[in-house]
Length: 504
Ligand SMILES: [Zn+2]
Image (cartoon, rainbow, N blue to C red; front, side, top):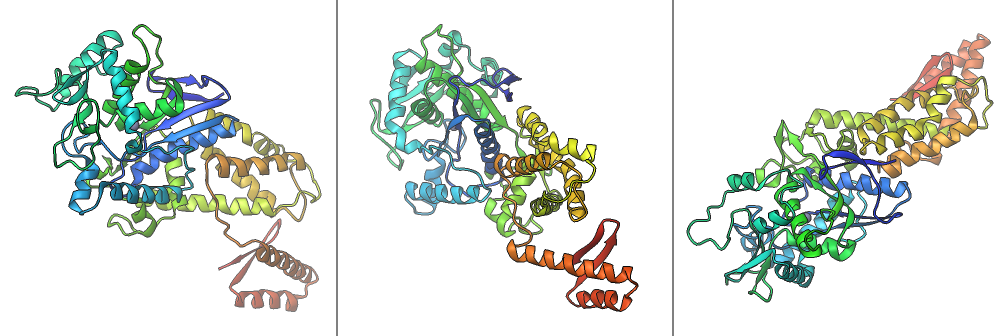
């Protein structure tokens, strides 16, 4: 049974969807004004694996990942300029041109990591009426107020009724003392913890819409409440995002959704039943992020162009690198770690090819109990790790435990077979499913199919002739074979199981 760590309750919980077999999942997507970087990749990848695993378990998942193209201000709060608009003005572009370009680029760069597209990808700017409607309902329910054409969420009032801070664990006093805003001198807000639902736009503002209160634009948080409610309902199963979104963004989302959808006293779900957050990727222990100036974009990883990169890295290497850590652990980036990931992945790729080359009609010799057990428990062991709060790190460790068995069976393949064919075939299917479908690692073929199978077959014939010649002490023939193969850079190594060959 799948267990997930729920930030809302601060413990691992058995995952029980509200209406099985359906699962609704919402992930806060990117603010589209720059290239996707490793931080974006980790969030998208964490929930890609959850999405894949839920489907593997048989759930029917509606997966919504939004595009933020309006309302996200440069200070991540209610101050500063809209991030997209700032970029658009600096580059003499229409804000929607910025949004379109970076939405397309995001999808290209993220899809390269074999991350599945969500089932719905709504844009904030395409849901202005839904956001206005929600703000109207919050006002009607008495949890917001109008001030100078803008609308603010009344955190103090909400706190009295529902209790604010249930997700982040911050209380209202901490929020005030942590606030950078100074309310003295004619602020529109009644309280420093209040946040904007709608902001009146000044004349130079580019992205603005009519509303009952002013020509303006929505606050950053309301879009996710409006879009998740529209597509997943007032209460749904999973809301995901990076840890850095817990406060204020997700805290505000919960408050908005409760204030809009649930009358006081109503048992509420905090919008989603399970709040799942992935940890950050660090660079030499420092948080990585666009606003911090040390983010390496996915494109730079793919072409190796960033000054911190020693080489270009394939998307699958990055995917594997990220999955080697549990999603709630920090993950420190380094070239060494990525290069180690590249090597480790190659070992899995080689084993998978060998696995596929093994034919089970080979004679069964005595069953090796250790091998048999290793293969027979593979699928359930991997499932147990994935069930334990999506532990991809330990799932990968289990895959590595199977590699020596695969390699040995491959080496023995012409002499006999040490596991039962039923166990072997079930294992072969599980090995592919766990690696390719659940972890989403699209293993590239090291060799290329039929022609390599032919070469492998021919090499077995040649090495067998050489072994027979040696047995007959016909060294003229055996040396001739070795020397001639050497001209093609093929090296032979005699082992108790037979002759192995490698091409240098
Ligand atoms: Zn969001």
